[in-house]
Image (cartoon, rainbow, N blue to C red; front, side, top):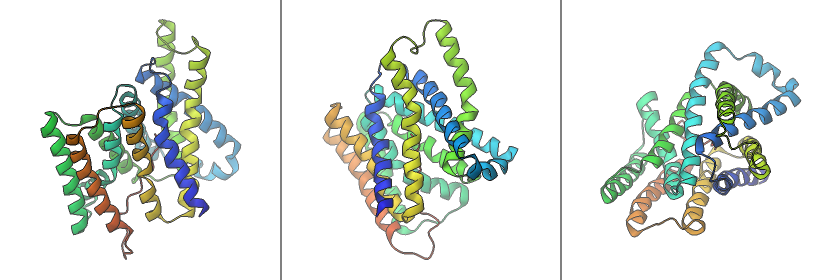
Length: 297
């Protein structure tokens, strides 16, 4: 039971990150991203150094090929982080929640396209419902919900790359931030030199930006603990906590519009998720298509 609460805490914190990134709307999303990378790397380095004896064997086993794969993963998760912060501070919280609701279904489609996975009838039905939801929203508004789709695609692609080279989550995120940290530092240095940087001008903003490393790592550690203690099917259900919190915050806390037209489109996606989840929680001999959303937002 304790493991479930670790999972609930992890996904709740990921959902509540919406509130955190809204604390400094005056900072451009790309600057927030750069600071998040830098301070996450600092926090992760401290944790890895403090537990070096337990992690030494894993880190010493990393090959150049693994580093290349995680470099690609780093670019994908960096893009996902940027889109998320951009959506939060530009009035697209509801649409961003749609992207994270769709991510499990996007993962399934990528499994079909890349790994030749075979879907069961109920899984095809779930995908069809989600497709109809996106199509409805596109026809109703004359444009694709591109933020939601980009978030789902970037995170789905990120998961695809991870399947090629699996490391424990802490070591993985350390390598990914290490790949991005130098460009992030150089970018921030140039901004500060030109007087355009948000750092070192306000004590409150400085603390919030630096704390971005902690709020990134803490949910990840909670998630890693939960995965070791509860079945994957339970984690697969808990993953919907985060986008649900996002959605509720967007509608009720930040008063983003949510019309009947949107309700129809979202409703079709949610119906697809209900079908998908019910199909996956049933005991089966093969669980290769069970989707675990290891979110690191």
